[in-house]
Length: 258
Image (cartoon, rainbow, N blue to C red; front, top):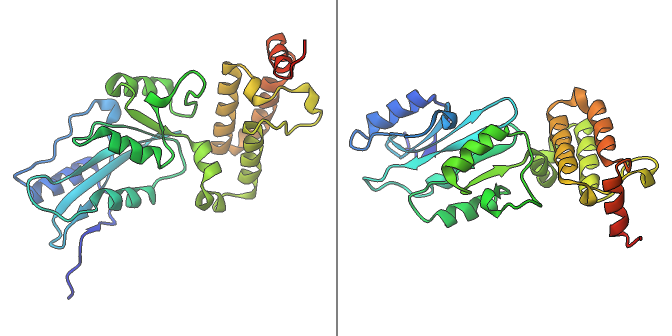
């Protein structure tokens, strides 16, 4: 039988299962992950060499509205095949559901190299964020606070709504109803008014911060929970109505009115 080269195993392991496999194949370099409980991961992939020995691993954990990613590690004390990160990233991405993703960075190498890698994958790195582009998504605020406390800006979120809008592969797999919802959100983000009587509404870019936060929440939650879209549609209209003097003034100022 022809010997197989390095590959990611199809099986998804528990943390204990991955750790046992790693330690059995690498007794001189046991797998230890010193991490707080809120960053524990329960699903793991393993990459093996041509001798079926573990050479690298990666993990994730799925919550109701978001995913936590991490755990990438390769064997350091012996020579191993290259390409482990790319192979494991691809294998993990193929198994992940369409939810927002959050992860932190503490690599042994150049941290900027790793951060740039994820910027290129559509993640928003928190140290790039200011008051005008805060990440608003389905990752709970307490989880975001934990990541900020530990990683001091060196953590990132991939927002579900942006991921869906910007991924042709993902869009092709969406239902017609999902596509209508995504089109609605895209129009709003592009400062269009996709409602009857557009003069009654304020453009997205001229809304207050809290209104923008609410709209992003409704759009992203609406993708996760289609049965609530009718209610969220009404909520979005309410957030954009010119009934608030503050929003009305902002809109008029943007047009140069007195």
